[in-house]
Length: 537
Image (cartoon, rainbow, N blue to C red):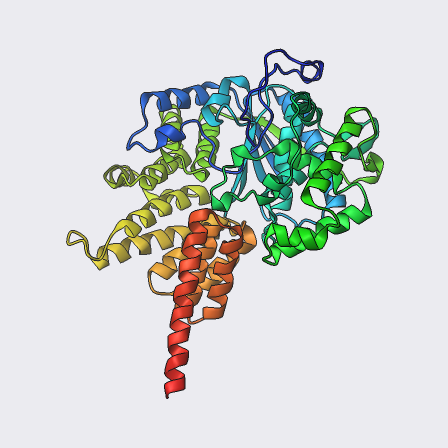
């Protein structure tokens, strides 16, 4: 979720009603988020990073745990409860509308007030979500319970619910447009309305019309982050308008479904469009523009109404105030999912400074240092910990990840290391990961660590079962599937390896897709050579 281009000066009545000053159109993103990203490349956290970490730690944090989600905020517990109520109702609606698979792990949403937003979100972002094997993690602006912040939270939660169906790779414009569509779900007395137009999107389109801007859909349909298009440049208002229009009738929904089916099958958007729609892109764009003009004039926009009494709304949750070290650890672990290890280190150091005996904080700090390749500091801190006394899965997994990271950095060509030293580190890591799975059999991080350690120690067959358990307890992600495919290949299961890597081609990041394509190409080369050899025989 992100915000980019600026609007003219002067706030509209609609924005004042939303409690916002004139700023930028709301945009969203699904990638690394922290403002400290610019600082994270250095070997040690800079003073600005340390200051941000102290500011984060000094805030008062509350946590709300429900079955399907966890909310964390530096705002009030009362505000947290209001957001939780909205989210619980929204989940009940989506469960009725979208046949999404049941989650293995709850999503974690960090709702940020003005005091902490700058530490986690770029100025142009309203929110962000990212997934890893351990689940989905999101940062969202939430100064107060306003319609815009509620929309942001529901938008991100739509990503969590719908993007978990990893078997299908929808076009980016549709993913964001559909999140905008469901994110505008609202409560009117005892009825949930789906399809209501977001006021800020309608206003954005109206402002453009006043400037004689013409709505076009070709740039949307051609948008592809995999080819280098930056998500911050996606036209979210037009994406919402197109998706909303295509959900207004059975005929249009059928055309949309066919278009998506053809694109997913591998056709270009131009080919899929020509087969799925009866008009040209320009004619469809005009129909979408006319549709949004009618909405702006007050024509009813919601297309689904559900009575609250008929929905299964889960309102069971617990709220508690976190200690400073508890909040630091949760936030630091979330930041590490986003790859900002230097900022995470600074947050963990704040936790250790205020709770020196907190083993989860101490081991998390070690993991953050290892992720940056600072193994002298890692070894020094590990020497001060008796790992046999660790009794929680997270601490064991943190310590194991540091040992595995050091082993993976060792090169067989390095004369200062030996293969015995490398194997010893992997063996220690595997032992800690296995202890973690005994304490928490539903820890996907621990199972993934067991699997990777077994592969590194020459036991790919033993790794396959652990990879399966990681997938059953956590979320599939690109890195997991790349390593799982490698284990399949080493175990002599080339077809299964290709299936794992094909998943990455659909759902991985740009770099992951590149690696997957290379691995598949190498696999095909080996198969072709084998077939040639068989033919010659």
